[in-house]
Image (cartoon, rainbow, N blue to C red; front, side, top):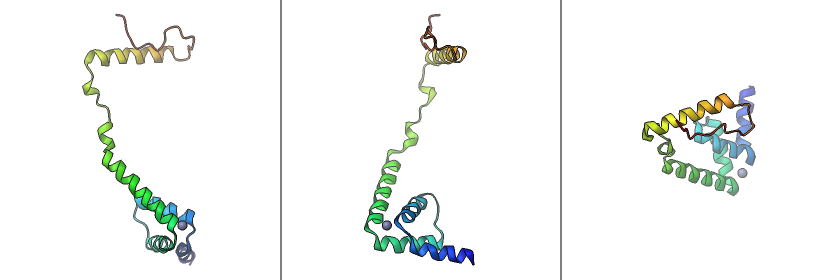
Length: 111
Ligand SMILES: [Zn+2]
């Protein structure tokens, strides 16, 4: 009974609830009552239709950018650079807590 009341409530969404469902719909399949309520709201609310349109546009931009291709591969670094970065990280972790600025944190090695 409570679920039925909750589902019926979905048929009368306010804009905040509708925009949340628009966002949720990008991540999961909406339940039947959620979809019905959202469709009813969008049929009447120009602002929420505009919000959905903008969100879809952003999703398309993100897909087009193929953000995975921006990941950094350490294979591209020369061994000398990897070693220098490793020494720098070691030096940073050893001197953490010593904020005197006496050279801690320098990545360039001199050996
Ligand atoms: Zn609305």
